[in-house]
Length: 90
Length: 275
Image 1: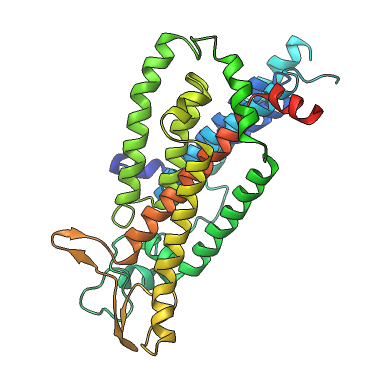
Image 2: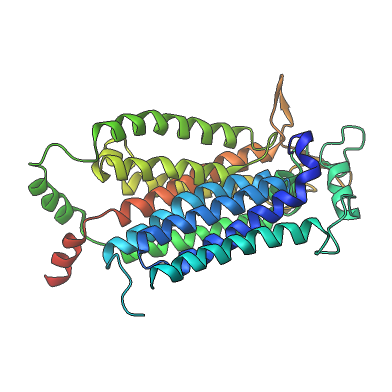
């Protein structure tokens, strides 16, 4: 699946994308601006989608991109639009 | 949160990122899955497109689609049914008089210009066509290349979602994607899936050797010819392309229906509840 010259770095790319997902998930949790949190969550989904690509799972990738990046983010933004944009307290 | 704390958090995250990368490069995970195939994977790869031994073949080079709709086809049929019930539940929640919505919206129609800026609208027009074309290609090639009905349907659903955001819900409904037509397409797709899955079963009841959701002819059921694997030069992979197209319609219209319901104006509901 991935280009030949990248295959020696497969584990490095996997580690990078999964750790990036972890970092983005952390920032999505601590972020007080819920719109920014939704976008960070979409970024985490992109990192996961890249992981699926690296693991040679294009079938999952094709379902994951529209749902996790598109539909899920829009549903979150829709829910945020019904309430307040900034998280209170803390 | 104070500024220095935010900076410290970011620095910690960066250190964590680099440290984990280095650790994994040095072999910290100890065991990575082997690249050799397990017997189950070998079975699917050997049999899914094997013209020399058609006893267990699915007539499709796409092993994932072959598993989804042939070897483990019943699972997918039930998944589709569950998804259908979820959509039906949402529609039941949003049950209201169509007439009152029409009268409510005719009052709003004085504002002609709606949607986002002209740049967004022009780009959305272009991207809309591309998304629909891509999703159709993924659905029609689902038995040959990665992807399939569910993937194509969820990709398709992004197009009306974009159009609702950039234009309005009425723009999408003007394209013919109204609540009722989506529900009709959805039900048709599900009925088509049920039909393709149940035809062999009906034959079995009639005394012909066949089993439910059968794709190709099997040695132990020689009477059932199987769905056509090819139509001239076009590879069809039997029932797989039928299932993929039907699932594409089902999932795409199902998601579109949900977005149409979510895009309904909130104060309309408030008025409806107050009455």
